[in-house]
Image (cartoon, rainbow, N blue to C red; front, side, top):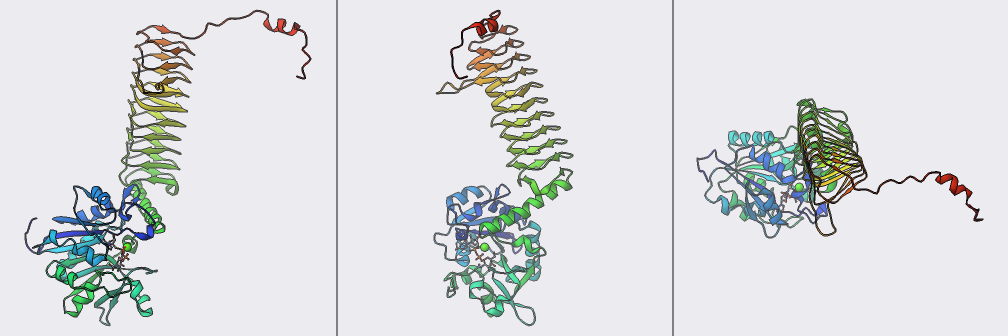
Length: 468
Ligand code: UD1
Ligand code: CA
């Protein structure tokens, strides 16, 4: 690690707790908010303060959390979750000899903005305190540690909800769980703390009273937007965080030139990108790492998961997953583009069409009621209504190839593996089991037979006496 003197900052994220109140087998910090694990938000906010090292303390589901932060932070294990002070102490070996300042945050505050952390760090460095807390005033402070100040307004201690007196419970200034500490002496203090409290845990918050009693300066910075510091401890708070963040994402999109007709029914994940003058209609979900170009019309009722969508694309009442759509494509209404599809510009995928691992060339049309899977379709191909690529023989999947400019008549079965040459025609209602050469007509269906006067002859038959 770089040691360039007092201004060096390190960061520790406490994320070892199970989050018992989540009632989950997944560690709390991995629960997604707007499509991204909570801890990624915290990491991003912390990264924005420019620390020379980030340490994440993991415990419950530690391997899973370690994987989620790989490459962005160092990981230390807290074998037993004995409290927040004990958690921070686990980072001591990685910070041995470090003489700068340590920013400490929890892994369960996904709304915390980087700017707020920077303000805390700057105030801490400017104030020269041994510890600076980030606090907030909450209308309903239930569950949080309360910040106790003296008559002069100086911070005296933090008392947890479960240990607080009725007078302390009335305090509305809460500890957000975010701190900046001078590294000097911190770990020695943590190691000396006791756990004589209601929860029998080593409280990081006890550092405050310890420092104050020793005459060390402890200051506080009040967060401007108290909603930012709300922790997620149960799934009701998870939904609240999701709601706030969703609104924030939509407002960013709108301010960047995207029309969102109904923010109440539009869901856009944090990692998704949407281009200028695109219009998003209601009941639309834009998930994962989806990227949408400019001037598109998305929805109503669209769900895009990790899709790459060009400019001027129209998608309505459709699901598109892990696929690419070129400029000017239209999809839907009622279409399902499954993973692995690549549509060149100007492709039309119409109603009741399902595609899977289909590569479709420029300007080709699959307008109605078709299944095209494991297929490569050339340019300017027309696929008639009811065409099915029969790609599965009960054991394995086989490919279908359709050349440029081919015309597939309605209600055709293409039994894979099979190749239709460029410019070939397939008669409607064919079941094609052999390759069709370029330019040829392939027909594979029973010949039509007309029986003259059939109805009149039928009527002359004697009545069989049935009841109708
Ligand atoms: C903590 C603070 C409280 C503050 C609140 C803000 C203490 C004693 N209390 O309470 O003053 O108002 O955060 O949200 O610090 N963790 C570990 N190892 C442990 C225990 C916890 O890594 O042994 C981690 C958790 O994963 C979590 C964070 O520390 O990310 C906070 O733990 P949590 O149990 O949520 O603390 P609170 O009760 O919310
Ligand atoms: Ca918490």
